Image (cartoon, rainbow, N blue to C red; front, side, top):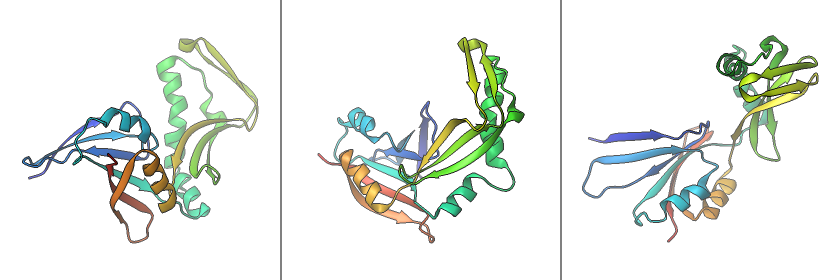
Length: 189
């Protein structure tokens, strides 16, 4: 029987990479979820691991812009509500006074950086106060707060990322539409 112990990082991301220790005489696998774009610091933390350690990395593949934007700006408004929740939490937890009705969700494909970006766009000139941070922030109409980046990869960019972080790809899998990949990689010793 395969059992998992999962430690979640303090950072969150739509991408997760999992550090997997293969045990020769054990049925237990230990996984740590880390942001996929932070492979270099991870290597520094795991250089003492034996050569039979591996990285199992799940990534989102580059798709056409319309598909990506639809995924991050769904008609039901679920993603918009999720994004606007940032302001609701600032109001609730830090005593801020954001007028959440004066911001709208925007999803943008940044082709140059190969990422989807979520923004909250101010619909008017306004000022928000965050007393717990002793901060007042002025917004012009159409000015945005960049709330999330969700990187997308091609085989080439994923291979380069892993190679730069001293990993060698052992095997890869994808879904039938080739929208997502799961890659098994090992450290280059």
